[in-house]
Image (tube, rainbow, N blue to C red; front, side, top):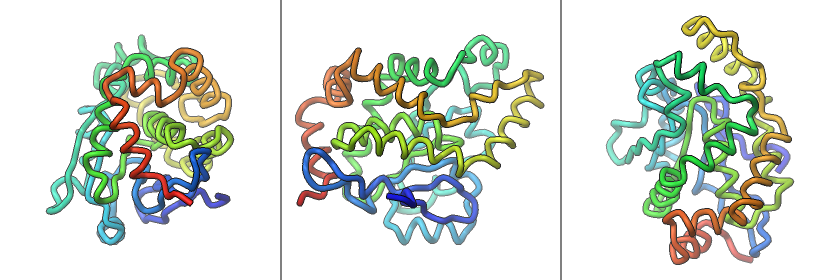
Length: 248
């Protein structure tokens, strides 16, 4: 998986296929079914044509209303494409900059653990939507495709039996892909808020996703148990695994 299934687009830098990773359950994650991305607000027409040719007919936008107001997903109003807004982390990505300051995490580890502990209903809804729309390809995204998207991707891969090393690599590749965009986002937030943004907010370090995974297992027993106890039941879990694994 040296290339990490990167899909080259003109106006999205972190668009990747989650398929191809080997599974301890047998086989591998299916290619061409599950995609992760940064913002889809600036897609060129060539990008849109590429994604439609890839049979992507479902978008799950993890951004907040404030973020969406800065740039609406360009696939949103296309015929044949279903768009779902399931906002995560509203207290951080908001126009209320005082709340932003107070909610700023001390580390990415803290942010990811908080996201997992405080957004279970929304995370279950993401999995429900992916399963309901599994006939065609699905893309889920946030702004940089790093934090909210990274957590959802890690949960999907863990549920599908992908080993931790591959999950960690899938997360950390974002830092290289998003280096230029991350700097622009940092400058924009600092300009709007007057706050000096901690550098770690724009990094994708292995220890952050390792801490998230440790918390996932120590508190919940892994993605399967987390989802099962938060509304995404046993049958849905089995259906999800059967749909998105390519068995040997």
